[in-house]
Amino acid sequence: MDLRRRKNMKDQNEIFALVRRYQAAIHTQDIEAFKSLWTGKNNTLISITDSYSGLDSITRDFLIGGIQGAYERIELIAEDIQVRFVAEELAIVIFQYRTECVRRETGESYGIRGLETQVVQKVDGQWKLVHVHYSK
Image 1 (cartoon, rainbow, N blue to C red):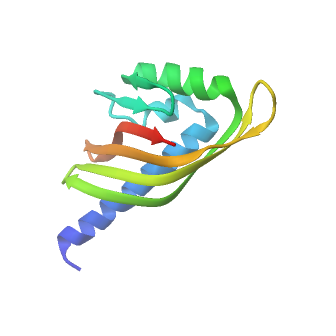
Image 2: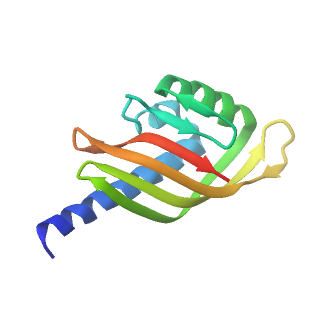
């Protein structure tokens, strides 16, 4: 196996690990773990119903106001994860997702499914999120 292919496999495995950490941060709703996944510059997130610009808004309005406010429990399941390298330090990640949630207000089960796209960038040797887009 040539050096370039091994590097791509290493980067791909690191990106898979980033997706798993993102899933865990959504599940635990750990604010610091969630924030550590992002580049901190020019970040955007598009949810099913809204868009958020900047890490502060993504954290405050999506994670805290949206997820923590709406769900007592949430599990984000990622399936069929595909990584496409756009440049040496930039990649697009696409996967099918589904959620298993318990609504905070009613205690009833709830879930959605769709496609998620993430744009990730390697910063100081670590893959970080730049953009996330959920579609249903």
